[in-house]
Image (cartoon, rainbow, N blue to C red; front, side):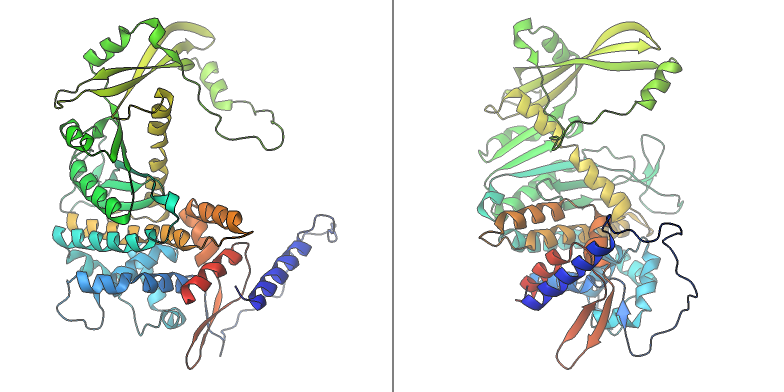
Length: 509
């Protein structure tokens, strides 16, 4: 970042700090919202857009060569009149980044001449054309698009520090996508009565990136096709430079028929939940008392100042007052034993957690009960507690799925058949991957600011999608076209702009 930009950012920060200074309050005898006699006009020569950060994201796409890779590897259009495949894919991916929640929101930016100027576009595909493009996809085309995205993500990974490649953690899960439509080809009714689709989502826990999405009818089991997708993801991660990989999934994803061949590769470890079958539960109950030891979970966070008094638990009080059945966790214990699943020729390590529960009704204690949770792994080195905690960390994938549902809105079905909705999911999820690539591209300059920059990189990587859009994309900008430059002139300030300009400097170089 050059000195002029640094001075302007510092001045903007000082101005807002002066206005928010709690020691310098205005006249408190009247409201602070005093604007009146408000008028609206249409600008003449000044042009601007609300989502100025889209230019930096497009520069990132161009630097990574994503647009060229799409045009070279995806062939769906016989004639480019006037759009290419990358125009369609990026048009759908940029929609959620500009706060679009439906395909129809593309129409807003398509009719914004200044937004078109900001991307150097004469025109953009309308929502109907975008839907027609989704319908052109076959399963082979969708696989080709996901392979292209995986090739580009490896270009992002290769600029990461050495410790980044020590271990890749792959999480997999299914997620229901409901729809109120009645004519969507391929949809079916799920176990809970939801009509729609049941996509399989595989993510990289290190960065939150979506590695693959497979759309399926709503009645398909969660684990269907998971092994094939894990094998594809393993190949991507090993080509990307990762030295070892950990596979995780709940009890539906144990994939016992594939465990032996995965265990044959010394670079692979796995931790899968395991069903509490009667024989497995009996083995846990037969363990001697000395095999069990208390499970001490670490604190969720460290108190930086002093502990605060916890507020009253209103929910718990209502349960007691209305005399609902209430289960309280009394203690947790952990043990382990060797076990060979029926489909395997090898024995593996089965870690078991025993939860001792007290069942109450109102103020009355009814009885005590025990619940077992099992985790199957080929990790013979880590402590049993570490295996449990690593398996529990897989729950963070639920946060990624929540972002894909409600933030990016990739897990939706706006088109009319299984393949077209699958293509829409993959292209929209690209917005989430761009967020991760944005964070990973942030430089970690050596020297006095190294730790600060690394912390900023981690914090941006963990941002929710809406926060990311507000911080780095929804930047009001004046668009100035000169003979050789397209200038985005920021019209406001926010605390994330120093990080924003650090990345812009990298993209310009």
